[in-house]
Image (cartoon, rainbow, N blue to C red; front, side, top):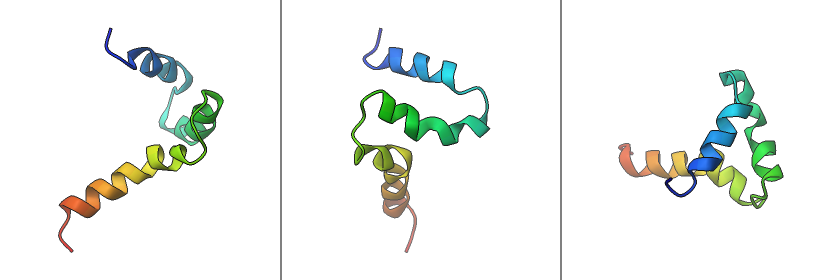
Length: 56
């Protein structure tokens, strides 16, 4: 089993449709993720990625 694989399996059971994605921040908080880390998980990585790869 790869590291973190069980977390993915648990999350999949909690998210049935795309409409459930808005529940993800609360789910992360309940699983012990730090309040400052949740925005980074939700969109911070995407902002960083696109700012690096898209032209200005």
